[in-house]
Length: 79
Length: 398
Image (cartoon, rainbow over all chains, first blue to last red; front, top):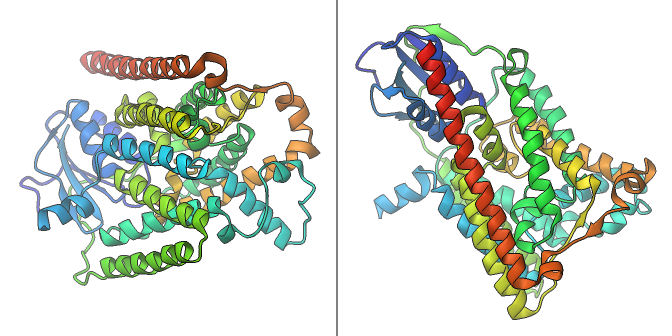
């Protein structure tokens, strides 16, 4: 369950419904320095797909595969 | 077997496949019953039922005469479409062990959902249908009102997306330094058993309807269930189709809906000509345009339309309780305003029921529909490209 590298920032989006997980994630990544690692915790089922797909479409890379943790997902994204 | 179960329950299904199946099923449902897959008409009737329970006599409201408020919701096929969708979605959520009570951190969402729900409910009924009857199942009926509705919804959604971007609306996320711990996962898994129990009970209801000759109720319950399963597993969000294009240049849902409508249109045309059916045509008037704009704005404010909120509520996203209540209140208020506040005379009376099959003939109708969908598809691609071009430019500047 641990990321290979400690995350620099965490965005805890548990409870938030779409589209806010995507908006918040992209904005957080935009505000961070290049190379910093963002951990996203989300439980909106729509965001399991649109957060990773949009992060990639916006040019960010994943530090590791998404982690399914019960009814939520964890994403590790480099800004 | 395990891999198949994993694909069905642990993954969300491809939206293109889901919407194509939904489009074909709705054409089939029309062939069997001469009615379309729709939900907000029943929401309006639910509002009427509640008012009558409270002792308000709505029998002489023109709108309820038009949409036929009769019997109780479980004796109406449209009612079973709605309950079937709820139950189908809940069943899949439980079978995939993904139910969880989800409460938004931003308390403002409840107010946004309630107000947005009212606006969307009011707008949908003013335009005679939400993104089903005036969109996804309206276009394949060749009812011209759905063309107006699509454009109007696009306009409303555009302004909704602008609103969503403002800080006072979206609120600040809880971004913290360092890593945080995820929730503890429960070791005991009981949800799939509950899902299976619901599936068995519902099968009993279906058998009862067909065995006692209540074919229309049985079909409503069966197709409602199928639609519920599909929208949940495909995460079919009509709100996202337009909104996410404007917000983040995301085109997946819009493209899948357009493909689904194209498939549905072709099959519906075949069904209409083979069985010699009359397509369901709604009035096209100023009310369609206004209703569509309000609907588009409302669904973005509420984060979900009348269809999307159904499966989200079943996933345990409690935000959608006030949205559901708002939808019913908005739809019921429209039913009141229709004659009591002269909305009909002002906005609807001068309109006309236009069906492309009558005005253009079958070949013209399908060709123009497919052309319109192709234009929508091209616009979607264009918007996605231009969004990403701008994003790259801004990043370069930064």
